[in-house]
Image 1: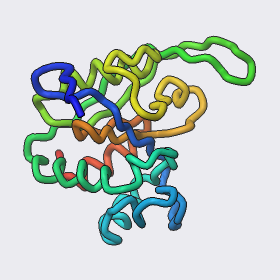
Image 2: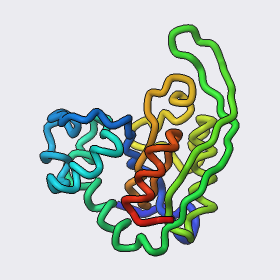
Image 3: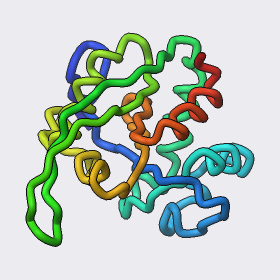
Length: 180
């Protein structure tokens, strides 16, 4: 597989795992028919499940170990991670009515310090539905989530960063990674 770099520090965003509010219960179908807990240890899954739940992505790439691989790399480099937020102007179309709507909201992120500028650029592109970093395998749905609360967070697996529209989920993820 050819690696396409968007800048000197990042690969194309192909796998972006959608995250929802924590359910407080175990969903055996979170990762389809792949590895149990997507390959996460039970302890890791239990810790994450207190912060967020995983949306079923419907693609095998998410089911067979991509999530633990990305998280492990992030934990190994967590001392170089920074948190922040950006305010984005977003636009989406309501699927039932076809009505075009716009808004302005904050998106919170946690990423490697050298990737901050590009992470902000990608978040902004997903908020407007422009996908400047190429089309991910499955829909990110950030633009749609502002209006619908479909998802409240995302874990980008190719480069290892989080972003959220839910401030509490973001704060708890920062705590888990020890980012102050």
